[in-house]
Amino acid sequence: MQLTQKETTLLKDLQTAEKLCIEKYSKHSSCAIDPQLKTMFSQISKKEEQHLNTLSQIESGTVPQMGGSSSAPVQTTFAATYGTGENKDKLNDSYLCNDLLSAEKHTSSLYNTCIFEFTDVNVRNTLNHIQKEEQEHGKAIYDYMSANGMYG
Image (cartoon, rainbow, N blue to C red; front, side, top):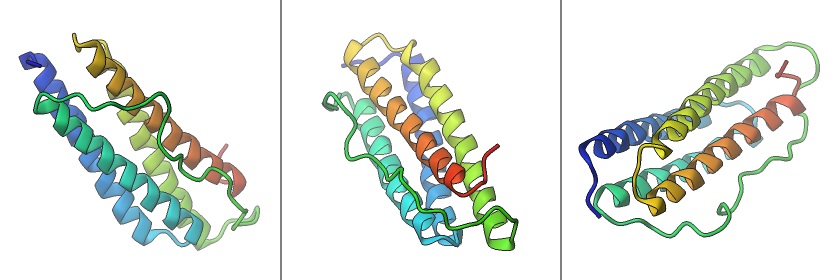
């Protein structure tokens, strides 16, 4: 498969976004107070590494098969760690969640744009699959925040 210059440039943009997500999830996992959050961030970081690997394969001319549904989903059921009041630990974890939720929104939006720019239907389907996983990451973060009174 031969990519156009525009497709190659868009792949580089997606790779940059994925690298940033990997770095953020890794750093935020070590900064999180709640063990549930540490685990979730670590799980998502691994998913982002898979995305980066997939993009690298596309860049080299190979479109990996993604299957019909997302691979093992990230945990989305959380026990409430924090009460309704504010405290230092809750504010810390809330900040980390908001930062990563913003990153997921940006990355999902970037995929949304890129999907329409690729001519190969298999690449489009693969990018669409990754975008769906990005949205699942955002949903997991929202679920954690909602369970802990951090959203809204």
